[in-house]
Amino acid sequence: LRVAELSCKLRRQKKDPYYVEELEPVLSVFDSCARNFVSPQTFYLKPRRQKNMNCHRATLAVFLAVSGNGISSVGAFSPPSPRAAAASPGVATTQKNMVATAPPMPGTANGSSSSDAPLGWDCDDEANCVQVPACDEEACRTSLDVRIHNEWYDLSGWRKAHPAGAHWIDWYDGRDATEVMDAFHSEKARGMWQKLPKSSPEAVEVLSKQVADDSSTQIAFRELRDQLQADGWWERDFVHEATLLAIWVSLVVGAAATAHTVAPISSVLLALAMTNAGWLGHDYVHGVDKFCDRMRNFVCFGAGLGTTWWSDKHNKHHALTNEMGVDEDIATDPFLYTWAPDPKHDSPLRKIQHLIFFVPFSALFALWRYDTMQVAIGAVEEKRPGAKEELAGLLAHYFVLLTLFPLGVWFPAVFLSGLMSALIVTPTHQSEELFGDYQPDWVKAQFESTRNAVMTNPFSEWLWGGMQYQLEHHLFPSMPRSKYPALKPILTKFAQDNNIKGGYRESGEFEILKMNWDLYKEVAEADPVEGAPYSRGHGQLGAISLGFSPAAKNAKALQS
Image (cartoon, rainbow, N blue to C red; front, top):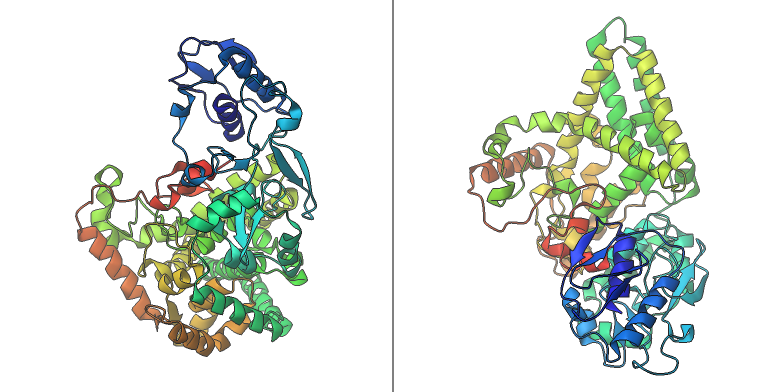
């Protein structure tokens, strides 16, 4: 069973081939991916995509026939998960924290019968699910249990159909995802989860002993959100939207008109247009109404940034805010460190980071553009929904940019826009609490990791693009930003009523920038710390995949 499971796991993860020791030396073992018998002393598993898992059933049959009483040392492959260790003896558990049907004892007549195989779920994009034999498709899961509104659901079949990718579902295996579900999804999507299959009684029994009940803060927040929803806080102000779009158009026209006559002015106007387009795109990608659906790819054409890249990276920041090693928005080393690193991850630049911070800040937009193209091309190759339209928008952006604007205009504009954007997005989180582990109370985590900026003039109010209302945005990311100013007294009272540490945090726009600079200076002067978490994310899944973060200690067992 372990060989079949591990072989499937490696194929699913598409890892490089590697060796697993500790098999029973007297047995020949059938490698279900290589489809051949191999020496058990060094069991070589090579990942290969397969349409079904009949070969794994064959593996089980070979084991039962050859071993008689089973394989005694296969358990050395991997330590059991906490959930697996707590499962009852009659429940078969896997390395993926799954609860499956208990296999028959070796030597029974029906030991290799397909009727004894574990069952899983297969769902379409409307959350219509049917039971199928487990592991009969590319993603081999027999259960994946997520709590939503105090009910456990088996999302093993839904993970493949999830539009934003399976990794989001995997990350919340064995966890509560209510706030994340409500925050990021449309009204239609928020109604679909009730159609999904419930977790098995055995899984619920195990999980209920390990996962804390919803806190009073979480319950109060859900009541607040329901009330705001009923009061129409998600209704969009189209006059406000039209005004913001008109400002962007004016900036682009002004930049084009001065591109060949007053290049410095053109660069400034173009940089402001890029930054403004970024905030508008940010609104539309987060939005869940029909208007945002139509405007979703505006950020591709207006700012040269991709919706897929933005969704993967930025939504992870919202879901796991300030979790060290997971949240890529605080993973800015080796140029800027937000805490003293482990010596093996240190850099000489750290000692002067408070003096040169504007250099990596300026490169932010250029880095985002590079990452965007990588992700967009990959999304097309993976046939992700809307990927071709996204890539077309990006190509149209560069066609217009390179046609209307000389190199001496658009090149400095990209870096000036990066500087402005970085000065806005970094200080609202980096000077607040950083978490070394997963935060089950998402609501408290948002209050404790976020600080608002109080503007002093109308230009700053426009330039910050709603990011000055960072707490409001993090708690209600799909709400139109025009509603955020009126939320302050409501959230202030909520923090007081629920005794949230630090309450509703805010500072002046220049004070918050000084706080962030003080943090860079403090970290620059600090000595490296042995064993400090590795901060920098890698790719869209960041350190969740690589397991560098304390918060990712269970993620390797959950990641597909």
